[in-house]
Image (tube, rainbow, N blue to C red; front, side, top):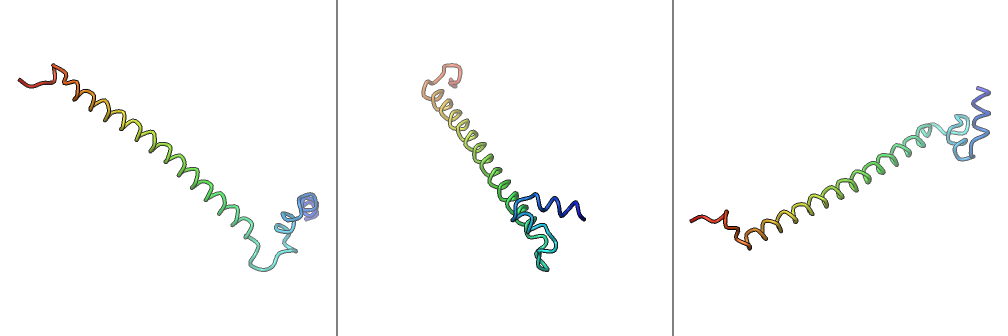
Length: 84
């Protein structure tokens, strides 16, 4: 227990107060951890949303390029593609 007190004394004040059981009120012991999990979850969500947006944009660019290629081929009227 003495080692824990030394560790808490060496940490910044808000963290030491949040983790010191003598300084906590009943029912507040896990609030800092809950906040960290909440923050990490939202960060993961926004990172995933950013990643999916980038992937969707890349797919849209590829689709537009394919449509343009097909339109160019139709306009050129390639001789091997015509039916007699």
